[in-house]
Length: 238
Image (cartoon, rainbow, N blue to C red):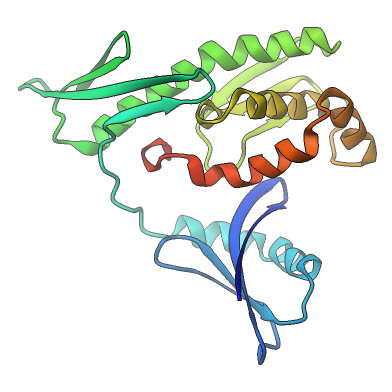
């Protein structure tokens, strides 16, 4: 039987599937042609033991994933940002000028230039995504910090493929621009999660107690967040 999982390994959400085999004696890891981590394990082995194996194999997982060939990504025809409850249709206009430029008009994004060069188009869209994230996430995080008595955070918006965010006791926070594809409740959950790291650098009982006091629906939000990576469009990945 094959089952999907998302487990945190050294702070990184690693999606994988477990196949339990009757005659297997050890855990084996491999990436399939779609870039998903496949885990084969003995039928009676617990999920906790498998998680420990992933933790021990973290360096191999990172190196093997980086070595995978990038999948061909098509130009999107629309962008849907749940965090803003907004959709944009995308129009592509070819001209003889080099590079690709983006113009936003109401609910339309117009990309003009060397649009036959798909990587250029995707790079411009990712830059636009980061700017959208800065406009929403930075003031939102500052607002949540004021509401809950945290110091004003120093924020950085990045495009990451494995983390939704990070936080430190010096109030330096990093948030993933891909949060823009998630519902606002999950965005708030991630922001509160990283703010809690200002007081508690690790995921100990005190950390989870603080986060649950700020986000009463923490278990549900944490569960939804573990599945959210599959909702991110391919073009958004670096």
